[in-house]
Image (cartoon, rainbow, N blue to C red):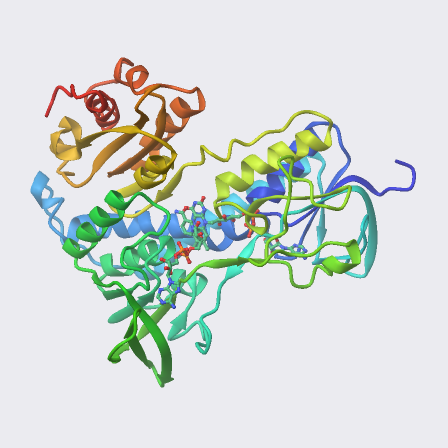
Length: 463
Ligand code: FAD
Ligand code: NAI
């Protein structure tokens, strides 16, 4: 240790980096975490998961009052929007949670090195003019917005997710470029608050990567809620004049162009890894064709002593994936066995209703062998019905021979909470029968998972 400043130095304090730092310190390693932002927590806490959920939660209340769903239950209110107060509670949530990480760093004796790190050699980085040598360096620099060629994000008329979280007034007409997770979550926020929202998606279905039944059902639900969906369409240009943007659209397969005017355009066509400025070459590292740092099963890069986790390495760009990798990498560095089962990482879209899945889609499962599928509609679930939440379904996919569950997909008001039990069941190698014979509390939305599991072998009760 004598000539090292740290056992572990982590670059980036997002959910990957800060969790790795805390775990490494808990394991008795002398740990530093480098972060250039003014607050800890990375994209997720500062401009991602947390502020978007604060706006989604608050706008859901507004919508419930405005769209008549509260009136259906005998609660009559006329909603009035105080957008500044809504933004204030979002900022407060971010402040409390980012401050919480700073507290945890102090509590666990993790040194926060303020600034941006750059490699000078494979075991040394420079931060704010000072050099630090570490036995192990973990790259957890996360990701940022993928730009759309030819489109300038001015954070006024043309915004990315960060700008879309902070709009000072509700747009009249918002065009969302990209019908993925960000487009649908933030598009939902502003639709609920009164904007006309048009989603332009290059592919023929929303939410690439999710099960096709879920993607089709989601499109129906969003249309019913008043969003306009332009699928199979690409944006070829955005011209801004004053407070108005004019977008040029074209069918993805080519054909006649059309134009659309809007006072707000959200660019949400994906995210790309942050590696610029790290001087990876000085460490002997490079990136793959997708800009990611390649790692092995243990999160080791090709250079001994340098590790990678989170959005900057391959895999889904999700906070919980980054966190689990953060724990595992710290354990591996400490000589323990840190493992993440990448086959069982749930994903959730926090719209209304929520959309969630874990494991294989039906198409992927079919490619791997014979399967059985059980489906159960939320309309037939007593709690969803009582709560006036009829939209959605649960789908359980099991191996035809072994009955082992290989994927679970759901659309339901609380799908994000429901999917945890599916992930746990899959982690334990459950069969559909195991789920079907597990007692689920009544009346809960989760009973729909039990019934879908029963449907795998053709015997649901309430359908
Ligand atoms: P990041 O959170 O991106 O953190 C990396 C940190 O590294 C940053 O703070 C950056 O400043 C710092 N950094 C970069 N380079 C350097 C350097 N050279 N030196 C020092 N510091 C550096 N995921 C979910 O699972 N659930 C959600 O609900 C969800 N919602 C999202 C909503 C939005 C609007 C967005 C944009 C993302 C959302 N995500 C969500 C994705 C989630 O935020 C990311 O997957 C997650 O933050 C990745 O964690 P990370 O630690 O890899 O990187
Ligand atoms: P995304 O990959 O989810 O969706 C981007 C969409 O844009 C795709 O459907 C793609 O086909 C489309 N697209 C690409 N180019 C286009 C073009 N020129 N014109 C029209 N459509 C185009 O990316 P998104 O929504 O930007 O989110 C980035 C990442 O952040 C995701 O990978 C996600 O994992 C993470 N995230 C996770 C959340 C969650 O877990 N709830 C919430 C928000 C973000």
